Image (cartoon, rainbow, N blue to C red; front, top):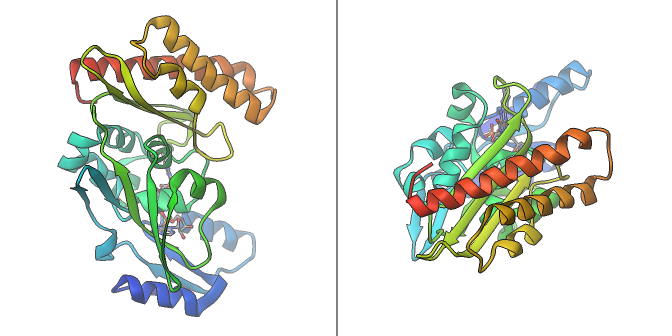
Length: 291
Ligand SMILES: Cc1cc2nc3c(=O)[nH]c(=O)nc-3n(C[C@H](O)[C@H](O)[C@H](O)COP(=O)(O)OP(=O)(O)OC[C@H]3O[C@@H](n4cnc5c(N)ncnc54)[C@H](O)[C@@H]3O)c2cc1C
């Protein structure tokens, strides 16, 4: 039997439906990951059943806005909306740049930021950006609401019946000082071999006053690299400092993953791409360029 489908009209209705239907209920937004998963289940002989609760159109999950220095991003934002939204382009160009690199136009038009986290992929581009920015996710369920760091959710997953409503994060002080870099196998699919999101805050002299560096696809889940961030703080970077910070990222990957055969390629490639991304973020911040 195919799964039942509910187009939820409100967040409370969606939470109640998930709670009543129990473990076989699933949230669906753009469906770009979930429909593939359902098809795989079917091909493996496990006919999907249960309930799909469609949250894509819920008003609480829409749009982006700024509130006393804090940016709010609805979980229902598609990557195309992240690319086009005027506030995101101005105050969070890092997300607009990453969104542009997701999949194809068809995918970007329906794939959501919330689904990117819900899918638990280590290579999720939007999640790497949210992790770099220290974003908090707001979650709703029949039991109430809670907040959790996106980095923790990416590592541990959601609790049963939870819906990601959106993300809150401090608006970067130097929005243009950012860069997103991604290495992929094949442009058509777009899944990263590794991705790096860098957001810096700079003072007038180009000294780094805050740094957020997220890295995905080379760890079990996207995560911040605190050692690299600490190296940049309080410094006006030089080429040697970019190399040092990038090496710290590579070393973190080696510690986490061990010496696999793929490291012969990944270790120097990640260090090189990371150094370039960090330098680009800083140069953009100096020039106040938009990505
Ligand atoms: C061809 C192709 C190319 C792709 N390229 C990229 C790429 O370049 N970069 C990238 O990062 N990803 C890529 N993806 C993966 C996918 O598009 C993204 O992960 C996307 O963000 C998923 O969002 P969605 O709305 O489609 O999620 P869905 O497929 O609807 O859901 C995905 C998972 O998240 C859960 N979920 C969805 N919304 C919520 C919510 N609000 N609350 C709680 N749980 C929720 C679902 O239950 C499900 O488990 C690609 C996928 C395909 C098929």
